[in-house]
Length: 218
Image (cartoon, rainbow, N blue to C red; front, side, top):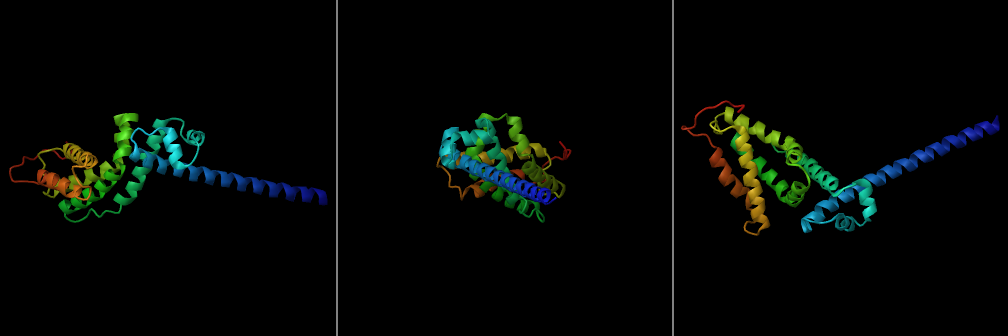
């Protein structure tokens, strides 16, 4: 009986030790994955055409390790973009959108611009690797926040209602990405970009007595 109890205790201890090793391995894998995603964003900023080997070098690990997490460059770019958007969501969720819709829009644009500026190289790389529909899908949450604010502004008579919200969203997207391109080309300072964006969008979106009402859901 003593032998059996000892064996049982030994087996239990061994199982516990195995579970601990597995947990450590999972933790190591998670840390490696996080390092790879950060390295991807950094490498792409340095070189939009950075290879998996370049990204692995940036992460300080071998290509085999990177491929173990992401079998293709497209999957790696998508994962890095998702990670970037999730970090951005943490920022945007803290932007107060109550009160005057115009001022709320100004705050949201300023915060969104910072994220666009930080991730513009990664987004450009993603546009080469992923279908446009997938890019749009990944931005749905952020777009939904902007859509809700624009709809509220229309209801409260702050934003024009003769243009559908879908067009206002498209215009916002085009202007912000245009600003990102100007910054990349060295023709615009990143710190000045929010002002330029607002200078175009707020007057363009402002309600006037000459606007003609159309359905909100258009």
